Length: 86
Image (tube, rainbow, N blue to C red):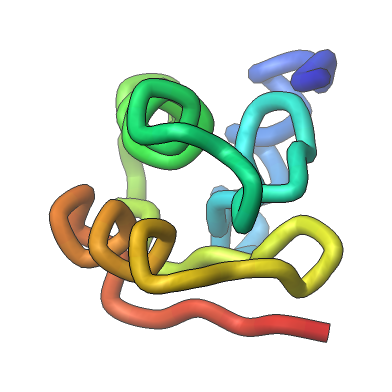
C-alpha cells in the first residue's frame, strides 16, 4: 500500500520527475469491481494531485500489466491521458 512520505514525493516532482499513478494498493485491476477501481485509480490520482501541486497526474502504470475495458473507462473518466503496461 501507499507509504511514501509526501515531502520526498514533492521534492522528486520539483526536481523534474513526472508523478504518475500506480494505484494505492497495487491490486490486479482486471479482477476489481467498480468501487475498487474508483478508489485505486481516481482517488489515488486525486490524492497525488492534492499533495503534488506543481503538476497534474496524467499517466498511469497498470499493476501487473493487467487491465480490461472497465479499467480503461475508469482511467479516462478520472482524467488520465496515457497508460502503460509491462
